[in-house]
Length: 275
Length: 275
Image 1 (cartoon, chains in turn cyan, green):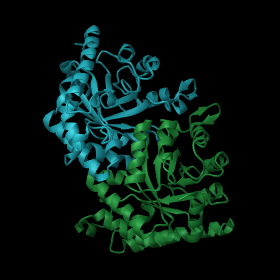
Image 2 (image 1 turned 135 degrees about the vertical axis):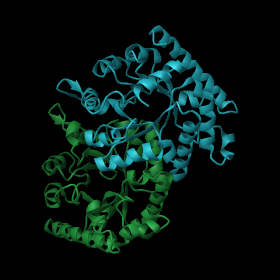
Image 3 (image 1 turned 180 degrees about the vertical axis):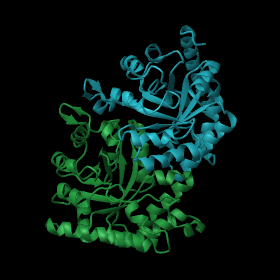
Image 4 (image 1 turned 120 degrees about the horizontal axis):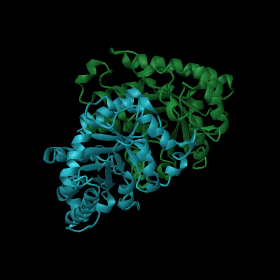
């Protein structure tokens, strides 16, 4: 999927929502635990209930690796389910990988060839040869960490060199590695004041914005500073959608919450003249 | 395992070698491909042949994830094999993970509780709350990326802020997070000129040094600048040991190469008065 196809999906769904499938067996409804694969059963129900309101799903690999090979099977089945039933969906493996070149090539193969994701999140610390092997896969995306949503983002990402903060250096350097059809950046919703600055550095690139909802970020502020003329935003919510209820109605409630966010996004897209 | 126990093993084996189990199905002897789990069969043979000369094994997760759940089973079996047969060995999951706090806690559980590794490599970009959840596991280690061995290390790790390079900032900041019984740093052997500087910043911490062998790093230079009075070094070799032969004698040749490096290390340890 290229950028134009992603924007087309955003216009069709009137949504730039990404639903984070951070499926924690300790948080899903307990009646699901009798299923042979509770994580997959939960994910299927959440996907079916939210798919009309979202353009992307983002399973975070940590929640699957916690259960070893069994967790990987749940992850593989989840991605196959989306791919088979909803081929228009953009699938992000939130893995935050990155290693020396020959090793990053293995990760790229793991997430693109084996799992079948459209995009993988990558950490920038190791530089160009840790990122480029992912970009060798045609029609697949790198989503590079720039300014993350957590408190620890202040430790190193704001260090200033040549009057530029580290996250600015990451943006400026990385945009020479790939065009906006293969590269996006992670920018936390908890930093709305920085999103305008970031938009100036990478005007045409999509930003994947986590941190709305449970982490306290604000959708209106993100949209005000982050939208461009092809939307340019995927705003993720995980816990704020998937854990609305721990009863039989868990999927219904997730759908209601996803629709609420979609409607807010539709209003924003109309105001901006994008739909 | 704490630092004293690790140093004890180094004195017993007269070695500070770590063997990297970057097991690539395209590089192992082809006659192994008829086995039900060629990767595990290869690893077992390599481990049995090299274990007298090494204190640590370091499987890199990318080489296992490339084969999805099946690869994770090979990884789990490999770690179980080491743990059951050679309990004195220090096991490093080279995973380069790091995420927001609640997610890093899941990775810590994946690698320490589920897989049973002693240590996991972690990327520093996301700061303290991406690292601290790993340190909540008693007797388990974080090995934090500081100065990596690859060409891309020049992109961001040398950026200078307040007269300090980013990797120096990472070292100085991270040493306030944990003492040398739970924290080490990755420092590439391809930067021997920086190891003396790094040793001044973190005199008592172990350094995990990849890049000797296939990547061109030099053991003598690493030892000259990196040794401290408890050794303080784990020097890793992966491709340089495990792919010495693609014939029936692959394990024998790996053992011969590991012993050669061990003997060089023994000479160094004797010269330094550590054994």
